[in-house]
Length: 144
Image (cartoon, rainbow, N blue to C red; front, side, top):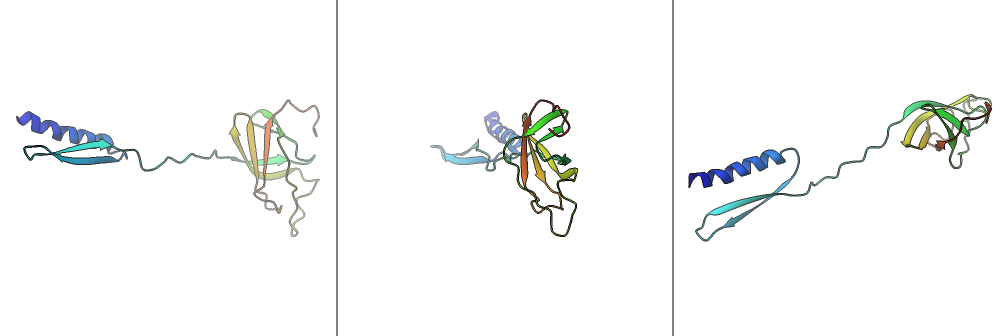
């Protein structure tokens, strides 16, 4: 008889230990014909959904002397996929122009065959604009 009373308590302790890592539990108390109460503990679905992490990028200087069309990143050649935003130099600076060599930003690989460059250059009005790239064959000339 004593073993029967210990087993439910041990089971409850085991369930509590298993669910201590964040899983929620639900309990219900039932009463049998003799008036004894029995607590039944069942795990419930987690109450929070894990957030999906955004890929993080790295600081990158995009070569723009010949315009924005290709780049080299992570040992691969890439070509622009889609429209390139028009970039305008801020009135208080003359750094950004067609003769500048680079545009500062953050490059993020968002897929096996996709890059996203986020403009963070303080010399242009369009800070925050993005440009996407897909893989391509190596260029045949410097300004291709």
